[in-house]
Length: 388
Ligand SMILES: C[S@@+](CC[C@H](N)C(=O)[O-])C[C@H]1O[C@@H](n2cnc3c(N)ncnc32)[C@H](O)[C@@H]1O
Ligand code: SF4
Image: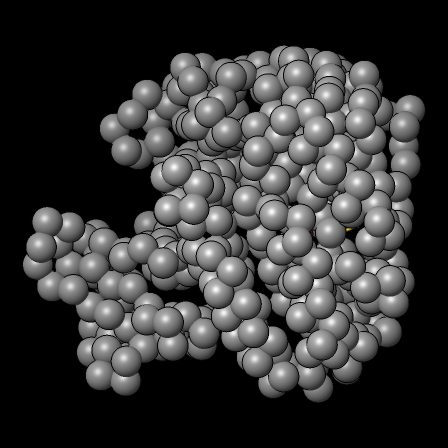
């Protein structure tokens, strides 16, 4: 039996896992900076891959809640998957309140936008990365700035009212003025949500080989870039609800909460099922990862066997530390109940005195901790100090 296939609960007393991740690995080409589980082209495998996804999902359905809160179809480039296969997949997925699909701009035609709209997708996350042609070239992106805008317009035209844009900063050759122009161009499109990531040098990528030293040298300047991102977006009415994530403040959109609910589930330590190659699942204190090897995966599922999965040890102490690390990325207080052994209370006291953490004792929620704005700018360093 698969680890998640026995009617597992999500640890909150509810009836089953409420969050599903579906990995679609195919891309038109591999961007030099990316280390996700991706495969170039393989159009002839798309159908077999969707068959495998559905075969992998079937025995897990009993572990899922009758209605899911969120589904995230990520990649890879989900919108590069052959349209008929993407349609078949979306039709077969369970119902959910939030269904996000990641899209690369150059793949978002009016037809594709309509397909998503008509098959239950509620939110589209568009990988813009930058609007500066010379930076898109450095990133080896296929989309032009015009294609990014056209993608957003096509999604708006079919009625999408929850669009997220991904931006990268710290791209080699990117000046502070370039960053400011990227933020302005993104804001001009009126996205409900923005994810702004500092470009990371992933080990073993072409990009790190070429630009690794340059990224290391500019690390200090990135603190200013990060502060600029936060100032600019909060100044424009966005809520900085997670280290790298922003959404239109509810007061500007009739109270709508536009945070990414699927990612919130990860940051809050909820259980989730992941299907597809390389996908991770965490259910009832157990974590496993499906094999990243396409051939092995397709062959096993075509034979009617369970997919090859690697169990990752997840002792409660690690889970608690993870809760602190992820929970403190959010702008909401983290309840300390059950996490006391993961937190160094003396360090917390010191960080409070330095104005980097807010520690609330008592109250309905019991003891809670949150990083202050200054603490959030320092981010990982403060959290590392806090861990016991
Ligand atoms: C794996 S991609 C999938 C989405 C889509 N294929 C795309 O490229 O836009 C998800 C997001 O991860 C971010 N990302 C990928 N590689 C990164 C890196 N080396 N450093 C920081 N962010 C990265 C990008 O912003 C990207 O939009
Ligand atoms: S398109 Fe996205 S997932 Fe594919 S290689 Fe580029 S960054 Fe990675």
